[in-house]
Image 1 (cartoon, helix red, strand yellow):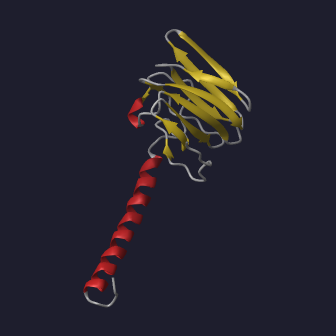
Image 2 (tube, helix red, strand yellow):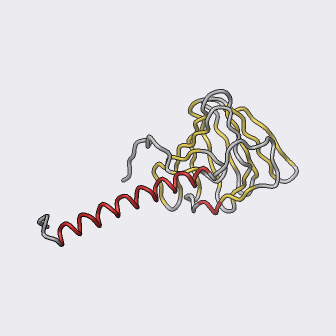
Image 3 (cartoon, rainbow, N blue to C red):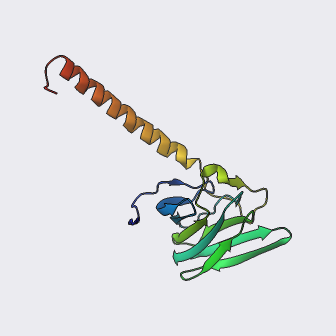
Length: 164
């Protein structure tokens, strides 16, 4: 059995640029919380092997989907659910407030390479996944600091200044 609460910080930025907080998952399906800042527009993408079920929990925005020659734009507001079908191109945007969605992915999300940037788009994107670079830089800085602290601790122990 697996239970968890919504993380306070995003786990990562999705390939479309939205904030992702991972929830419970199995190989056959996964859940995530998705947040898009006010007035943000994602990069258009499509999924190679998964489908997603979306449920809007707060905020307002729009979802654009394209499959073959058909496309549509629908409003996203609390209570709206939508399907992002296999290999369906999509893009979404938030209104003047954050847009928050629960995403169920079937099968479970295989990783960032699953999403491919689309050659089609409805709006000009305002965010990108490159914000992850800042997060990775911050993580690397913290890891370097921890390594330095551990090395100093090891040196102190080796010199007999601290008992192991």
